[in-house]
Length: 230
Ligand code: CA
Image 1 (cartoon, rainbow, N blue to C red):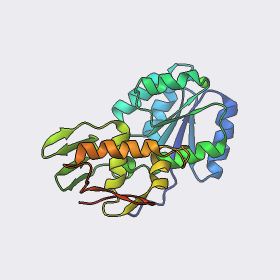
Image 2: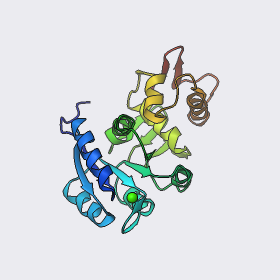
Image 3: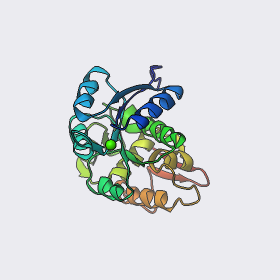
Image 4: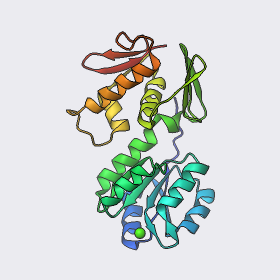
């Protein structure tokens, strides 16, 4: 799949000048086009005029809550959102509210960490495969609605399970390494702690395979990763 050579546009919604300035410089150096809003009203305008590929959204903003704006963005667009929070206590809130954030970072964060997360989010199959429906075997994956049906019946998947299946589906017939799975879906998780990945693969098999113990579609490639076959 050939991607456009256009540099990704990042919209930073942040009222603290020190963060705005540092991020604008830092992310520009990393090859991103940066547009900045200091409040939600400005962000709404830039969303239309600058067409960002990703929104970096602060929680505490002068004209409202970043959490509410995140939900609004999630309901009205498909732009990935990284929430920025100043307190670790807010992370549970962000995750618990299911407001549609793709990822989050906690202040103070290092630029390298943020850039790695931005790249990981932009690489996600859901943003690449936007608009596609993939059919294989008795499965049908709708990337817009984020739904999976099997023999016409909807399969209930968690967000991570869908992301994982989508990752495999965009590389149908190819081996996807454990590293790629972890890097794409669980940024920052140590390679040595891959039980989470195995648990999700197991659950996916239970939902998409006739005989999960002897999978026909989602195969383990020992020592390397996984492969989804049609
Ligand atoms: Ca703030």
